[in-house]
Image (cartoon, rainbow, N blue to C red; front, side, top):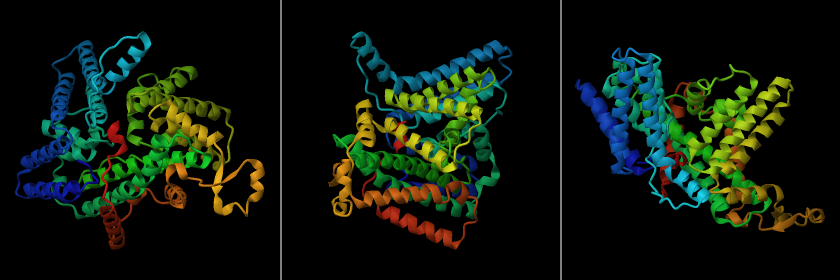
Length: 484
């Protein structure tokens, strides 16, 4: 079920909210928790019922392994470490089977000329997210950082529908105490107002902004055979903004829906396109993923404690794997590797203590991110090179209306005519891009908005956004991160 669907907006979410607090009010708190778990599983099964077994098996398995590691039953550290390795391996094996099996077989077939059959399995929704969440639980159980959590609370931690499909990647210590708290079992009007406000902003981001950019990005990447310079830049920038408004919109809706149930999810975005270096970008973009990569991969690899060369290698390994986590394809791996190299270069630059003007630093960072997204979006390297070739070597075509005023530019190889023909676009695309820059660089982000008091003006604003979004739900589209 999609957040941006009529079923979710007008049936599922209101019904679950009303029944949940009704059961709490008549003191059937355990039943209320079971209702929320059942609703979350129904939400997940809406997409594919047969994969419901996978998430249930994952929940039972990891809860059992976590308890086995943390309890005094296993006094030997060697045994506990062995169980931990077994638990992590089982999680990665499940993820690998569904997400990477065909990718590796394709490469083996191409490399040695074999003909291993491909399964073409549909990727279970959210498997990357709930796998990471439960790996953190196992690791923390081994470190003695987990308490003896109730099984229902643990199940809710994994399956809670607002963050189940595409995050944020939540941590057990910030979620499980909230599910156990009696203070969260009563209706909180402040949280309802704040939740509806943030949810409406997220819905508007997805339906009105991201889905519009998606039209031009899809046309440029998937349909057009060749792009001139302006078409290529509009294509790449459209995807850059589509991805941000799509994923941050999902996160806003997740945070907003969770607040209706008095649950606070962690912030996942903090104006990442304002970043003035690549390290700052990753502190602002997909914050919960960055946190996971740092705490459960970078630091265990040695972090920056084993010398400069090892620090650089660890950074590269982390982002190489981050690319692979996002998708089973060489373009994703190349995208992750680009960011790994960029972070190494940034570390070296920082050691040299050379300061760059802030505007230049922002310009360089934004354009690197934009160019790297080309590989993230492209189906293969040919599509990526098509867009990049257009961006840097394509002919520059300007609107025909400017030909008389700028006639002198003919001598520099600049043409006039249908400047966005390959995208079936025109002035609206350029206006949308300007507005996109304005929003990401000047508007307050969700982090800033939820720290403010929500009054009548803010709720009226949210109502307008929700109404405009609801009237735009003529074509339902999935969120980009559903594919990861």
